[in-house]
Image (cartoon, rainbow, N blue to C red):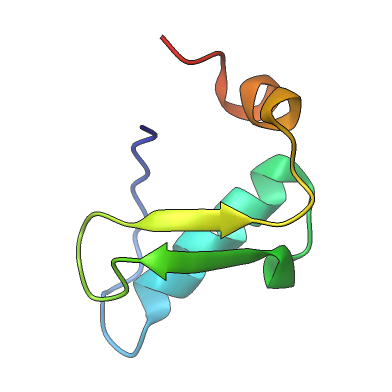
Amino acid sequence: MLKVRVSAAPSDGAANAAVVALIAKALNVPRSAVRIAAGETSRLKRLEVEGATAADLAQAFGAPP
């Protein structure tokens, strides 16, 4: 699990867009490669990232516990 906090308000999808942009930047992938798979209107979200390997995730966010 990764905890992310953004300053964008949750109106009109701004917070979701900020989360997608943040993850895409951290993984060095285009924003179009990151999508919210579940939790569009929830505080908890599940993301899918196209083109990122487990090694990419570990390098960007640290190894899982």
